[in-house]
Image 1: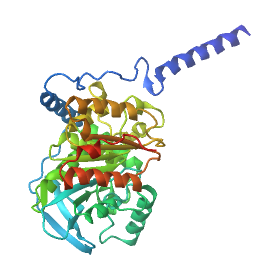
Image 2: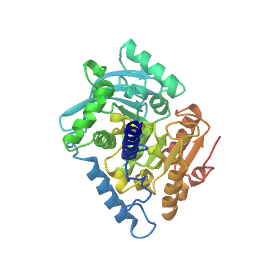
Image 3: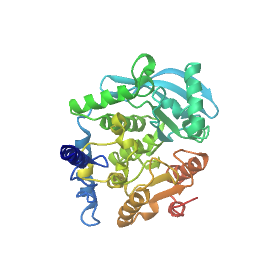
Image 4: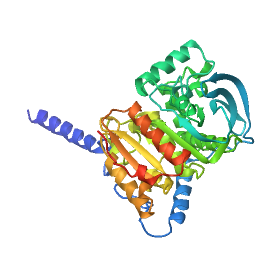
Length: 389
């Protein structure tokens, strides 16, 4: 009996030690970060702070792909649509790397305001740009997938087409891994294993998956700004979910973005440590998570690099991916914009909705860009209530 009690005691002791090694998916002795030494303090030279923080973010993103040699493009095929022409094009997103994209150009005299439309993750790799723009000269299978996706997540609206019909040039590309940039023929073999392997190999090579995606988005902005039918002073960028993260990341790092709308992707880093969150899901984490960033900056700190330009952040109160940390992030960003006497240029809204980009949210984004890009900036519009339900 004594021997049995001794063995049981040893087993319980070992279990206790083992349990202490990982607590809440954090290494023993490590706690969620609550201080970020490079966050804007409200004092000092804001432009110097922004320059320093941008450099740190770019450094942590890893080695950047070489810049493209040209901003010209080749038209693969075109479709005449109501109020605009939809082109499937190829353009050089990095040196020697030509990618397919959709470029929608309004009919009439330019130059026009323009939008970069950034697709979501959703574990749906077979389509990317087709989540934002109705497929151009694609197979019936791709069309069916795209229609099902926008019905589920966008209330049946191809938002890129919707904006093009209102007078915007719209560019939509595939992020690396999605659509034509995935694995296998037409990228249709991409899955979680592909994502995991790519994320791991990026780290081995000195770069990051989120870095490559962000650089592609920055080069897409540069490409759009160089087009003669685009007013380079009126370029906006928007997206939902991972596309929302991509939107504020690119706007934070590029002054060519005049206004940004991010839907369903903003919370404090501490809040995203919660079990079950996408930031903790293998390779998915590295499409949106910059290694070591939280040692220096919180998510809203990076987004605050956009200040004092107009920015709209939207979230859903029923969004299970962001159950907490949203209001804290909004408050942190709000203090930065206020410190620059630009509080009326930041709009943060919460809707009684799950993780989606529904019609009500789309209308808010439309009005936001209308004020920020189509007419002179209207601060009174942006100073409306920060909460809707």
